[in-house]
Length: 542
Image 1 (cartoon, rainbow, N blue to C red):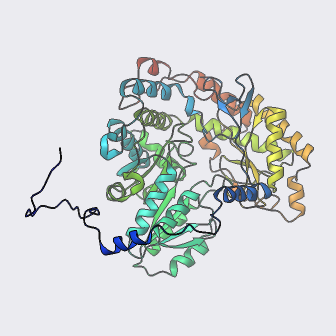
Image 2 (image 1 turned 30 degrees about the vertical axis):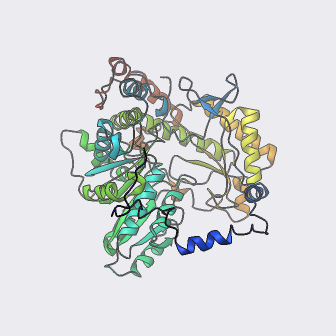
Image 3 (image 1 turned 120 degrees about the horizontal axis):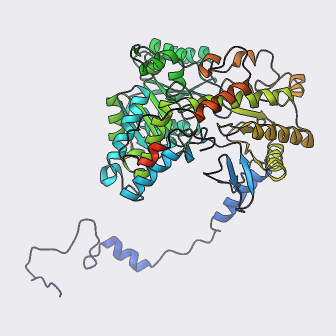
């Protein structure tokens, strides 16, 4: 049906945002009379040529990245199969540090939630994606870090980017002071904020203080740094940074991505670990006050659910007002689909499990010490650090790739080469991450394979680096003494005169006879089957 308007009608078919074809403007009429513009005569931009040129640069400087088809097997941790389901390799570079990605309690929680609530969240938190699983997970995270509130994101890259971008752009004249080795997610967030950035030398408190002192006390300042730097294994002087923050009126933004689950009596990270006894006492009848502890002094903590907790996602934790500000203003949170319910339930279970028992962390640390000691005894260049990371310095992108390939193809060991831009050119390395499941036969195999590869390729050893004056801590006098493990012997339960292998055997024996853990709280209750399996040593033989 067609609507016909009378000639004297005041109605119009025009829309303010649409051109009325019946009432052409003079400009439109003139353009129509001229006809279409002539076709350009110059050559169009070659998009495919641009792509290929960029890739060629990566190939030429040997930083092009190759992905290996590695399929981790839940029932054979830490083993995996390659593109062929029959070909087995041992994974030595996973960030699933504790094997929680195949923990039976986590899997049971996820299966039950998946069967009950389906695969996806259905939308953003504002549109059907807010549910009991998100509420429970954020409550668990806030309690883990001793904070008022927490907020879950799709990843910690997004959490860091969104939080720093939002705070840096909203605080008037904000200045963000960033450690020179900070992760790309923080660098990206600072860039997106548009705030002034001041980069201080890695873990250099004198340089940080000089930069803080140059700013007015009234200027809002954020000190952004990590607890464990994942490519070199160094640990930040968190307490000293807190002291400077208090002195110069800044707030602290601590990324604990590679530390949550791994340090502290409850796995809350390095900040908790620094006051180990105080936080450990929270499980006793006479808990000590946590006021003024390092973790309490940190303003904003960020972490991941995708490494030591074996799932996926990221989060921030801090004051209720800060968290609500990010919830209300950060596009990276507002416009992102919520994590699936099963993922959040699994992560919640993993956090609670690790907060109730330190055995996986202890075994991981003991295995790390054993690997570092064995490699150092063979003059293999382990970059000194106090953490769970075992970086082997190669110093050449092409050789690092060849070493990784030989380990995989000739020895059935998967260790990914790390090159630029993850590390600076000339600092290429292999990055090894022992887990509770890397028992002695696997460790012996690794050490023998690394020794063979170093011989075959003629790679520099510690003594070679030392003869050249040392590099990134390798072959540097005093570097080992300055990087003693952050986990003390007493915290690991090491008894006087006890060997590492003796301690590992004792831990395995204890794991086999451990008592059932208390039921874990979850938005989706765990099944009876899940509770009955609590006495299995997880990440090792479960």
